[in-house]
Image (cartoon, rainbow, N blue to C red; front, side):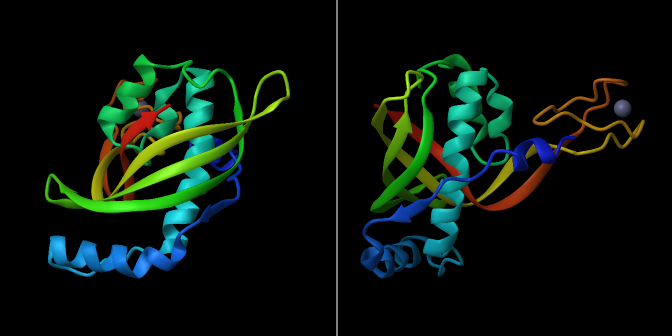
Length: 184
Ligand SMILES: [Zn+2]
């Protein structure tokens, strides 16, 4: 129940429109962080293709918890505060453009510009333009899938067991997390 909810959100087709610049981006990551990155453009595109539908779903359902594990904790809070900003549109595909690399909190961050093809609630097509910062290497807070105390399944994004109130928070390492969003 807790895991399948996320899986049911099908990823959308995602491409990187300046794939030829990946080598330069990876080189900047290595020179700024002192270590080569294990992240590949395929991983970046796959992550964006599943994170974009999550963001639109969390926005229309006003449920920032869906973003846990994929977006940083401050962004989960930001999306809960600003829920509804995406006006009920549904994303159908996304093209990412690699912009550059900078360091934040000791982690390399790749800035991307996303052009998201969306379908408005009235069925008409539109394009949403957003900047996303992708942090390479992060620890994020997620809820365990099953309560370690009473064995109850934990709802998606919940951090406390709904039955016995046990704290089910767990820190996990992820290769990529969305660390900043600019929607406009
Ligand atoms: Zn419990």
